[in-house]
Amino acid sequence: MGFAALFLRDLRLVWRRPGDVAVVLAFFVVATVLFPLGIGPESNLLARIAAGVLWAAALFASMLSLDRLFAADYEDGALDLLLLAPWPLELAALAKCAAHWGVTGLPLAVLAPLIGAAFGLDDRSLLVLALTLLVGTPALSLIGGLAAALTLGARRSGALLALLVLPLCVPTLIFGASAIEATATGEGFWVHLTILGALALVSLATLPWAIAAALRQAGE
Amino acid sequence: MAALHFLANPARFRRFSQRVLPALWSVTALALAIGLYWGLVIAPPDYQQGDTVRIMFLHVPTASLSMAGYLLLAALGASLLVWRHPLAALMARATAPVGATYAAVCLITGSLWGRPMWGTFWVWDARLTSFLLLFFLYLGHIALNRAYDDPERGDRAAAILAVVGAINVPIIKFSVDWWNTLHQPDSIMRIGGPSIDPSLLWPLFWMMGALALLFVALVLVRTETEIDRRRLEIAENEG
Image 1 (cartoon, helix red, strand yellow):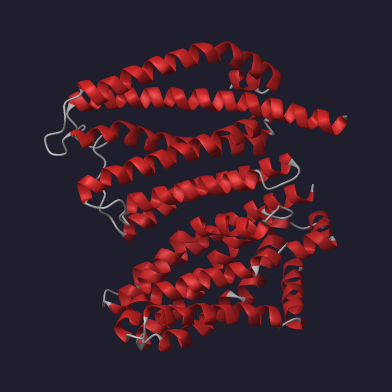
Image 2 (image 1 turned 135 degrees about the vertical axis):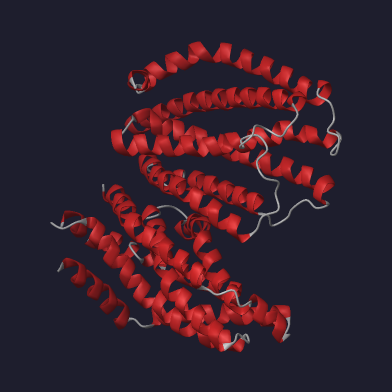
């Protein structure tokens, strides 16, 4: 009950201000477009680096909207109500992260193949790119959710958030990009994709508790 | 456990550390002097690497100790979160910069060693990269700890980060290993005994002990400082 209500509330808030999502997606496009401009238009080289560039850009893009994930609720008092609510805070944390994924990870997974095509990835690699982003971005949303909860009310929280998130996201980045690389070399992406799924599941099983602990200490 | 509870009281801890520290400092200084003389002068040069092998006497111990330091940080974080151990927060605050410095020394000596051996200061090898990430985890902990006006919030946030980070360290290590490997495999802890000659192994163990003593001494001194600082803050807020 509460889970669905909170999830839908967060989606509705974003729906009423669609600019917030548009900015994140626009950032993703602009950031990836800078690479061909900086490196040069040689299509072999671009296809080689596409996997890493797209994944790193997706990581930065999903980080952009994190600082507002809990901050708005923290400032207007909604977080205090969540802390007092008679259902687990872990579920609330999960609902907020799921909503964050729905408005960043999911659109990024849809948008990335379009950019990938412009980088000269073949059809199979584009499919794998979308799959890895679909499977991997939930982990990014959860890790980001933890960092967002930890930095509530901190000074310089934006830069601090990046410093906390990036080292923890390295495994996701490595397996996401290597799955696409493995497809290109004909190795098969299945192993990489299953490990990526395992990382997402481990995050799902552990991080809601850590986020709830962080929110509790922020609310005290 | 009983000793842990006994020392949980900051005032009692302070008396304990003030009694222990002078002796600890002199033992540490002596052990470091002996270890450095042993490693840099007495130990024979390696048959392949020549005198550059002496970098190992700083590189390997600082590597192990900065990893152990992160585990200590996670243990302190867990005892703060579970038992609200009042000293754990202050000690974590004292430990993180020492561990980060050890990691930095390990990275710097490693790149100085890499230049003559591999022909380059830095390679994107698995071990080097995962150590760089450990260093960043330390930096994140230090920054988060000091990011709040209310120091107790910083303590608890950093404690949660340390516990999550410690769970992540093996995952990061594994994924970076998968990504690339060039660094030589472990030569001390391996099946079939160490592959290092005893004439180099013993000074290495000695330096490991000496630098561990230095780590403990630095953490104790810094914890005393943190206790004093917290007292000052409380006094200022009341006055």
